[in-house]
Length: 592
Ligand code: DGT
Ligand code: CA
Ligand code: CA
Ligand code: ZN
Image (cartoon, rainbow, N blue to C red; front, side, top):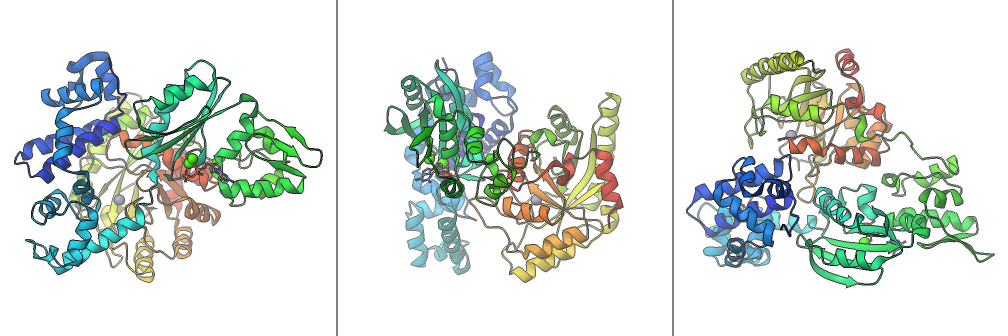
């Protein structure tokens, strides 16, 4: 019997952690470390859930996932059956968590951590900081004063970014697992996420789940004893709170079905939105909380089982949760009046016809062109743009001018093969060209001219002063071959801030030169973010939403990008990859 319903992401995280700990420990067996890393990546990228594969086909079926050999299959079996792996538990006791935590410091890898730990006896970030301040790190081989300062700066940047909030992709799968587990319990009428996850924020403080039922006891019981719960914080009759092993807090509240509307409205927030709504209600002589709307003078209470009815009672249109941040949505809802929807044509995932940023084995992707095309076809897309990195991105393998041309031939072959199968699907040939620090592009114009669309991206020196980085990117945007500006700010959520651009000038240039601004859907980036995307769209800029996928699984991240676009009040017409291919190509060719 499978007891633990581990997701692929959780299994992948365990194997990545095993590889890290072995490497920190200084294991001689480089081969084993690499095997664990490969398995971790392959599990994360695998289309099917490994737990399902095991349940359906047993241990033999696990070999379906590349890299899972006999030993690792046994480990997965043990994890799925008993939720513990003795080998892993032993490794965790040998290499303390505090030591592993040092890996979070930018620029610090397992080999360094091994030295800090074994040579200096440092067992955590705080003691590392003390050692650096005492000048002890500079004496290690291949270190020095500069490297020591860099580590101190890295520790400071960690403090700024570890806000205790998790990325949305670290929370969404957990929400889906919990909801699936609770939905089938007898008596459950409705179940939905509230709070920041329902509003589609890029990071989540804690996960709020609401459930409509007249019989909360069994639901609370199942929730608190779920395998994901590492700790039960609160065990009330209608409210429970648990923590998961990844440090996520989950609040579950049982709601009387008759007051579902007010409860969902209240617990969705945001707090600022609710304050605004209550201020307006007051003007009507009404007050509201999670249980009812009250006519204050008559002391009469009204219950609502739907959110639409709550807003209607306040003479307001229903507001999509993504807009509830007190950014003008309450005013818009008042103007429209009851039983309407603020922004009814916000973009939806179904509107997407293609994906305009992805990588293949020509650079640092894991699949070939055909592999990416096949996955995109299963998603119902009509086209994709292949955008491998140019060589200038020195952290990863890139394509040279000759390789861009050679890739063009491969793409033509893939298109011919798909055409033969009578598939109406087109692979477009693009490239992600690096913008050098002086604004020059990493590939010659004649090569760029051969691509259907060209994306320019900045990956280096993102912390340059505003004037410098703005000028650098503006220079690239004026090159007539540039069609898209990829992940414009360069931020990595919970890891580094984006560049300090003069955004108004970037948006003006995008408008003038018809450069499409990307909303990168990778949940690690989500870049442009909502406020900037909204401003750009308002100014008339065109945007794209693309996954920046490096494997098949990452193509499925499109939904996170669409959510950001919804939070930016964006409609399908403003996103170029909702357009039919002919319209997109016509616009790109006719521009400038
Ligand atoms: P988070 O968890 O930091 O990502 O953000 P939220 O918005 O999920 O915040 P959370 O979990 O504290 O509360 C969920 C919603 O419940 C919040 O958006 C509004 C409502 N709420 C909770 N506590 C209060 C409160 O003390 N006052 C008001 N006005 N609303 C509250
Ligand atoms: Ca929350
Ligand atoms: Ca909460
Ligand atoms: Zn990039």
